[in-house]
Amino acid sequence: MSRKSAFLLVRNQIEQLFDSLDARSFSSMSIAQIFDSWKRKWGLPKSSKAKRFIQFLTDSNLMLPRTYTSENGTQKIVYTWKTEDDFTSYSGLVNGGYYTHYTAMYLHQLTLQIPKTHYLNCEHRSEMEHGELEQRLIDAAFSKPQRKSSKHYLTGGVKIVILNGKFTDRMGVIQVKNETQTFFYTDLERTLIDIAIRPVYSGGIFEVLEAYKTARDSADVEKLA
Picture 1: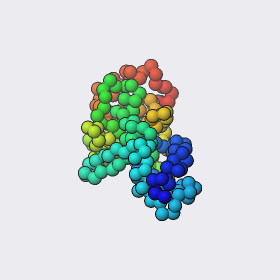
Picture 2 (picture 1 turned 90 degrees about the horizontal axis):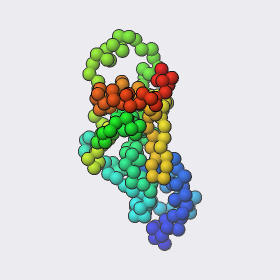
Picture 3 (picture 1 turned 180 degrees about the vertical axis):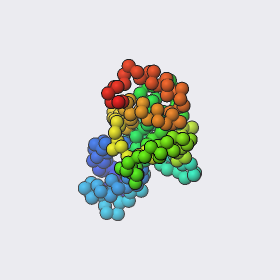
Picture 4 (picture 1 turned 30 degrees about the vertical axis):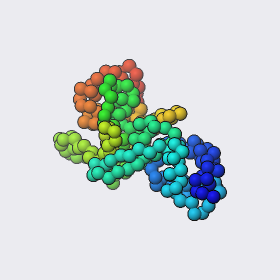
């Protein structure tokens, strides 16, 4: 029996599994990990390979691949499950990422512009995050030009900038999940705070000002305080 035929025999089980997952965007490594965990339960031969499994999924139009090029020219493929949605695909570039700044502004309809640059944040822990902040360090930080992330990916004329924000335990992060989309982004109040701190990622000062004007009747003032 061919490998493709073996996969076809358990296609319904494969679809049931991926339909049940919270994520809809995957790297080849994450698909391979899922395959290695489930191939025995699906009754597939031990010799079955993840590479052939991924090929079966793409040939069946279950996983839809999109290629991204990084700032140093390397390529990365993100696979989306049964959807070609842009935001779902972009979110697969990093594990646990969520949209912030100008992208979150757009998702909250705080700008009339259609962004060609999107911002995807991946939280990290810093050695200093739990220490006390000294005023001199705060003053020094704000006296310097704002740093901009150089890590990004390009696809179809769109740039996705990868931010490494401080650890917040995903505070103020919400999810979109429907038949065609699955991704996370900051809620309105977190977005307003972020864009005020980093206008360079938010279209500039005037865009931030317009966003605040647009949000003034819908933002929760208590959450902002």
